[in-house]
Image (tube, rainbow, N blue to C red):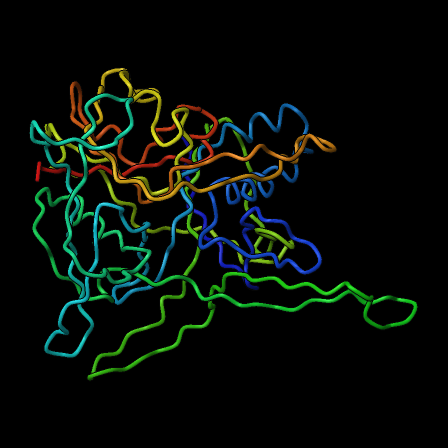
Length: 387
């Protein structure tokens, strides 16, 4: 099995469309982070450019396994992976530390047992779901939408519901900045703007230059974010190297492509033998049951027959609508049907009935095999305790 780590740094503001109409008077806006299908589609296009995209080549390209896309950003030690913030936490502002740095209080959300005279309007299936409770009665703060790999692993390791405090710069990274551009169409005959052909786009910025900041005697660098993905394919598949400059996302805007190395977290030893585990989505999940994989109704994860989990509770934000285009098809059939995804950061609290939960580490829990190969439904595993 061949593994390659790919870095993509858009040169221009990147647009990964949100699926809303784009025409006169309606801007094209990017989502906050690209969907897995947008990145693996661009990667497969780059790898297969010399294969002619015939039916056999397309099938070989579809077999490529995608792990990502994730944010790779520079911190004080170098480049690190960052994952979407988990949904099983409520963030509050805390007092600044002695150096004046902003502090956040992280309050975990955990499943709680109901008393005999209590009830909630939870879904009927699966039976026996418990509520997820925690936090306190005050307005929460906005935490970083991306957590560093170290902060994510620390969070997954802590099972109890006690609060913890983190400096913002140690916890993660803020959203990518956005740039809005106004466009118009020029008529070649008149060399003037065409009437009514005025539109705007709003894309994500990936700063290429590294700037240095100093505060209270400390010096650090701008995150310099990139898109990072890992691909796997069989040794028999001989795919070429990537172009250094190629489009990604909408409007065919250019990006720098490279391959390199970065530390990928391995399944931790402390996860072995745990009876209560939580699965945190690090990419959006496409499931047959809508918000829940069908196999969690009673069965095994895809491809892991010696592991069985049962769902206890779930912390899931609002569903994400997702569509796109299938360029292997022609004409009006190329538009993909709209699907609703469980957003990245969703957390499933489970009980292990059989097997080792480490088998699920950074694997897809999607019911659909192709969605899993595209990179949807990837999870990290942690532990939890009843509140």
